[in-house]
Each structure stands twice: as structure tokens, then as C-alpha cells.
Image (cartoon, rainbow, N blue to C red; front, side, top):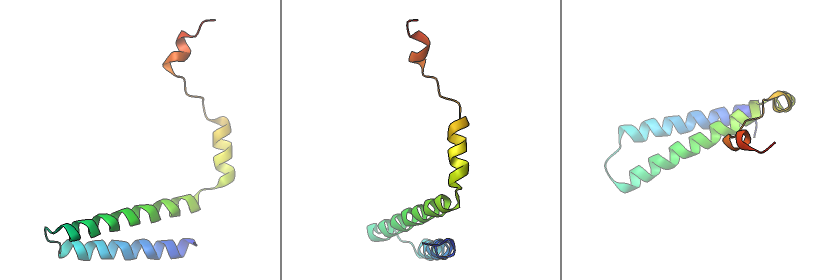
Amino acid sequence: MNKHHLIKQIKHKELQIKKLHLHQSSSDVCNQLYNSLVLEKAILKKELENLEKNPVLEKIKKIFNKKEKLICDYFKSV
């Protein structure tokens, strides 16, 4: 998927969520539909975020990123 298509889909999901929120009743079907729309929107946003990442920059960050120390690292016998 390309970036513009994802942005259009996200805006469409936001519009659906707003419409459903205005007409939302306490029924289980409406709640499930609302939750599924929110989940789909989150998935689309994550896909868009992944498209915008620069793979070269991510590799460089991994190389220069400090290694996390675990508490067990402090108690290793020398």
C-alpha cells in the first residue's frame, strides 16, 4: 500500500468512528463495531508509521544503541 492510500483509509475510519459515536447506543453490536473500527484505524496508523521509517537510519540506530543492562548482569561472577 502506498502512503496516500493509507492516509485516505485512516481518515475514512475516523469519519466512520465519529458517525458511529454520534449514533452509538448501548447495544453490543454497536460496541463491537466501534471497537473493530478503532482497532483497524490503529493497524493502519502502524502501517503508515512503518512506511515512513528510514531502514538505513534504523540500522544505524541499532548499531549505536546502548545495550540494556539487566540486573543479573551486575551479579555475574568475574
